Image (cartoon, rainbow, N blue to C red; front, side, top):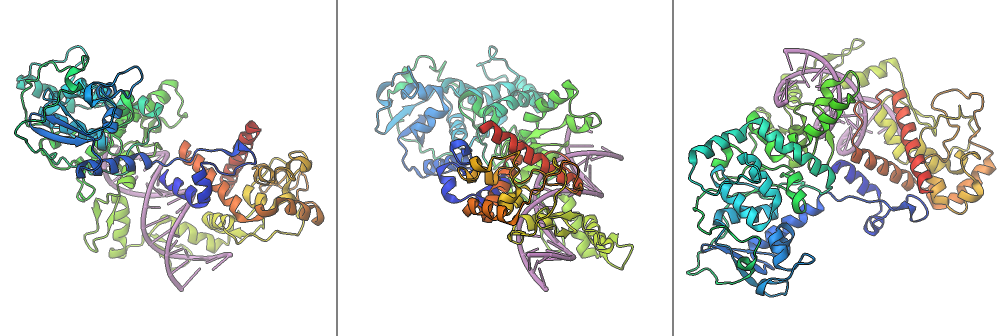
Length: 593
DNA sequence: CTGGGGATGGGGCCC
DNA sequence: CGGGCCCCATCCCCA
């Protein structure tokens, strides 16, 4: 979706973007939401940077000597405890001097182990909870005290505890080890994920698109002689009062991973650096960055980890989606396999089909390129791409043209090449009727300016239901494409050139997709004069921009909803796809109207 | 502007 | 169930 968004951004005027709306249609109907998936993460990232630099910190948390400067607003956003403490929640009263007021304050939280507190803080700012197995309990406890439900849930899941069976008596190394082992089981993970999926889907929080420094670096803990005495709300808050500040001080936790969505649902669905809660296993034992972007050599295992942890994603969404489809028998008859593994990307929300494909997809967000060419050093995100790349070095060109000596690296290159031999140009511009051998060239043609000139030559169109090349016709065809049945020129064109001009249906009625002019086919391109008039009415919209915009929006919609697997690939299917898009747009427009 | 090659990302099938 | 492999769609770049 990032791609889609980029496209969208690039096609939508900045002013419109800023205004939060795009001139899709004349009135306010054109309001659309333009997502900025990375916004939330960027904000969080910067807040974290400020925290690390001690900038704008108006709250310092202390725990047994360790000090953690932070921001009230962030803490209030992530913790029920602080929310109530600072009076940031309705009905809640500001507690003590730490209250919503203003000023810098210190909150002593000796009841939360320093490392756990650090991990929770890290979580608050990075949406990633990184902890050692041995520190799980401390974190769980801290999360409970501070009212960070998503972390509580996650820790419980990992520890295999239910809400009621939290054991505060630690020391049961054996038991814990056993639990930790259990945690490693897929089942356990899946269980967690399953719950999260729904959250993810329900809450449209944008997970972190990039990896915000999830290092496990220890927080600046400068042990002051005496922890800032602060009789703040921390201790006055009844509900979150610590059971016993005596928690053993495991050196365990080092925070990190988890993603955050708001409140309760927050962390859950989000989990991830890119979305997922990191449930590292062995990795937890090592206090180094869990999934550094720079970690080039990603072993398969690591990759797996990434998928599960970093993305945690995989399981998150996969379960639910899969269950849905499987349960309902939906998912389409012959594609059981496919229905088993749809997973939602925590970053772009896109549904990724195919077993084990999410980790691969996640690398498109992280930029990781684990596969390096041993010959030239070029790196790739996928090993199959590396494999193809290697053909360059080996000289292998496995796809020979049967008609000429040409050989190709890619099967699709051969395919394209073959069309040259055959002379086939199955992709025809619905507007100017120029034919192309390649679909992408037609698309480029359609999107570009190359087809700008209005074809003054009246062309009989084919059958009525067929309508392709929406924007082409819409834009330049302008009025020519209007059909009296579909649009009332008097009402739509003059008064709302926008809507009519770019209405997906506008100008498409009666346009065929290759079908010959059939009975009932309408002459869309009317008289020159009429055409001119219509175009004049369209005014500025004759420019290519609207067409681009529409395309961008279309892409955007598709991107959001997820690409339809196996969309039409043949020219016919492509046309059908355009038709479908146009119809959908038309429906939407109708609804708006 | 078009043709062509290459790169990238997603989905399906098979192991 | 995940990974490998393949195919496809799309985009970018260059001539």
